[in-house]
Amino acid sequence: MKRDFLSILDLDKEELFYILDIAKRLKKNESFESVLKNRFFALVFEKPSLRTRVSFEAGIRRLGGNCLYLAPGDIKMGARESVKDIAKNLERWTDGIIARVFSHKSLEILAENSKVPVINALSDLEHPCQILADLQTVYEYSQSYEGPLAFVGDGNNVCHSLILAFALTGGKIRAATPKGYELLKEVVDRAFEIARKTGADIKITNDPYEAVKDAKFIYTDVWASMGQENETEERKKIFKDYQVNMDLIRKAPEGVYFMHCLPAHRGEEVTDDVLDSDFSIIYDQAENRMWAQMGLLYLLYR
Ligand code: CP
Ligand code: NVA
Image (cartoon, rainbow, N blue to C red; front, side, top):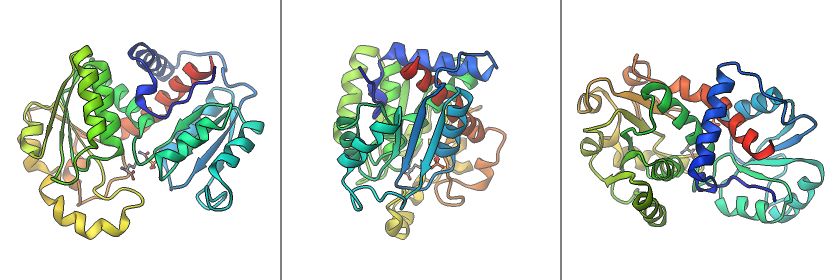
C-alpha cells in the first residue's frame, strides 16, 4: 500500500525515530543503498521555495533518483486543470509527488487520486518536512527530543506541525501567539489528545515571556506567510510584541538556542543580532532538511 506524508501524524513514533536515525547516519556519511534508483519524482510547487526544493532535489539524487521541478505557474493547479486530473496524470510517469500548495485540501485530492505517494512540501495547515529537520537539529544540540521548545509568533503551518511532533515524541512544547492568531483548535485538541498517551507537556499562551521562561530552544517564523502578503502591514502592528530580540532571549534560561524555518524577514519577527548570533542554529536546520527528507524517502521507498 502506498504511503502519503501529508501530516507529521502520518508517522507513528517509531517511524519518526527511524527517519531521524537514518538522517543522522546519512549525515555521518554512512552509505546506504540507492533506494530511489530508477525512481522519478515530480515537485509541484504553487509557491516559491529555496530550501524545500533544493534539499529535495539534492536528497533524491543522492539516493539514486531523479526529479522534475514544476514552478508556480507551470501547471496552474486547479486553474488550467483540476487537481484530480493532475494526480491522475502524474501517477502515470512518476513514483511520487512532492507538492507545495495553498490549500491542504489540494494535497488530499492529490493523495486520493494518485497511486503514488504524495509528500507535503508545505500547505496552509502543516509543514511536516520542516519539522523532521527541526527534530534532527534539536537532537544534535541537546541529545534529546525533550526541548522545551518555545514557538513565538503566528499559529501557522510550522507551529501546527511542531506541536503535533512534540506531542508524538512526548517532548515539551510551548506556543505563544497573539490573540486571534492562535493555532487551529482542532490541531491543539489533537495534540493534547496524543499528549495524554505520550506524556508530552504542551503549553499554549498569548504571553511570549511565559512561553520562553524554561525554553532550551526559541523558534519563530514569518508573521505573514506566503499568500498573506496583503496582511503584512496589519500583522506588523499586531505581532510587534512577539518579535524575538535580545530582550526576549534574556528572559529564557542561559544557553537557549534560536531556531527559524527560514526565510526570515529580518527586523520583523526576529532581529539581526539574534539571527546572526552564535546561539542561532538556523543554517543547521536548513542543512538538515536534506538529511531528514532523505530519511523520509528511505522509509517510504525502502
Ligand atoms: N523552510 C522552507 O520551507 O523554506 P523554503 O520556503 O525556501 O522552501
Ligand atoms: N509559514 C511560512 C513558512 C515558510 C517556510 C509560510 O507558509 O510561508
